[in-house]
Image 1 (cartoon, rainbow, N blue to C red):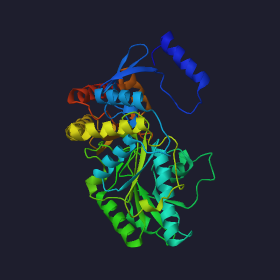
Image 2 (image 1 turned 90 degrees about the vertical axis):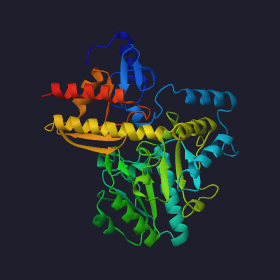
Image 3 (image 1 turned 60 degrees about the vertical axis):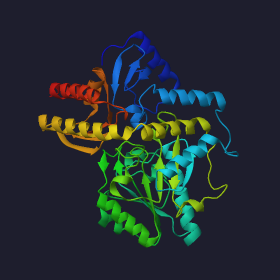
Image 4 (image 1 turned 45 degrees about the horizontal axis):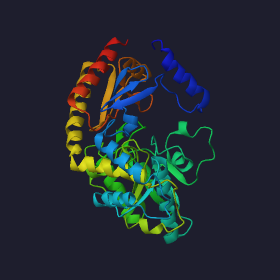
Length: 403
């Protein structure tokens, strides 16, 4: 990396002296953003194809989000869930009106949404069938979060190291492998958890036929089907929810990331097969569904639906996939595969992606990995053709310069 200025070095040193060492951070201190671009404290400009890891779906400084959050901050920042608040009710109404679900539980993150889904699934099963029916089948190579339940559901051993014992009665099976899943179906299973697209697991889409088979199994055995759409939901695949592509609606879905456009919010939605089993006192979140977070969610959904931002995702997602395919054709010895859906794309390299991402950072392009050999592309949903061209030009230059 180039020599950092004193200003940036100072921020890095200050951060390293007071923050827990839980992140392997790039040596960049960001200052502000606009649209699809960010600037560091030295004034260097970056094209952002990370968007907070699929969070900042409206980019930076979106006028609607800025205006609505400012208005809400002046009215009511927070109130307890001992009382109703109007943005919470309105956001729940919006989510249920555009989905296959009837009830919403709000929280603060994707991991919390997954924890809520795990609790609801086990509670529903045990009320109906007793305590000997609490096994959850999850997928190998999945990622569901860092809290204990979510981490235990995650099918990657690197996230488990040092934290045993994990939450029990969780079984992992190979993703997209129906035979392996069927081998684990016992009378103790209460739920199946799957990502329609594995994000951290390398941008791996689920086979629609696999999801249909899971739906049929769950219906036959009265098992709850849970989709983790923390990363794939809220328009990233060109539809509001990725499950719409397969025509398979789960019983429970988890959302976060893009839902708040950058403001922390998570949500667990359920249909009437599952939702009624949560009763007062079964679950809670102090900050879940607070007025600011729900105003952010309302605004994001309004922009997505009323301004037809999904059409942009469809068009630009198709264009991004085409450009990545062209890059693979240009460098077949370096790029093994291009995969994903619309503005959730990944390229698998024949080497570690770390030096490629570092080199792109030097040239003003922010990218993120999805495992050791996959680069993930999750730009803001407002991205335009010229910005995709800019990103592909930088990436092509970096690949050409690498041995």
